[in-house]
Amino acid sequence: MAVTAALLIVTVKRLVAGVASREAKLQTLIHAIPDLVWLKSSEGTYLGCNRAFEPLCGVCKAELLGLTDGDLFSREQADFFRQKDQEAMAAGITRENEEWVTQAETGSRIQLEVLKTPIGVLGIGRDITEHRRLAAERIWPTSCPATTSA
Image: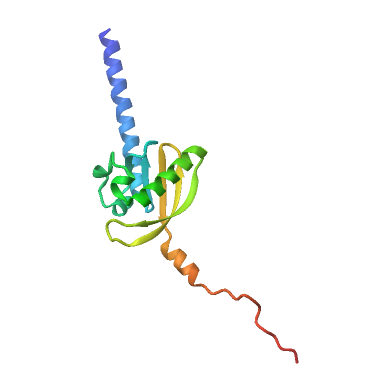
């Protein structure tokens, strides 16, 4: 029995070390992503985020845990986010949309391209403000230039 207990303890320690190692690698990967990454429960409480997300909501990851969009954003914006979260969960597939957000840290408005995946709600957002501005500034000819015949 002592041998079985010892083997069980060694096995559990290895499993825990393996899980901890995988968790550390996953956290390193998530924090290295330049896009905003966040995870919310199906009830809408934040379970985690990467460093790129922190300036958006104005709090660090440790302070974010357990909060909701209503704790961080205007009511209108929080309601919009919740609607999009629920749409993704109801669809059961990743949904893509664009969202205008006011950054808590700077007060500037940015446009995000957002993917919401219904595992709880995994969100990934990319700031496309500048991309959209540049695209809007392009002037496309509506017709071919006039040609003259000789």
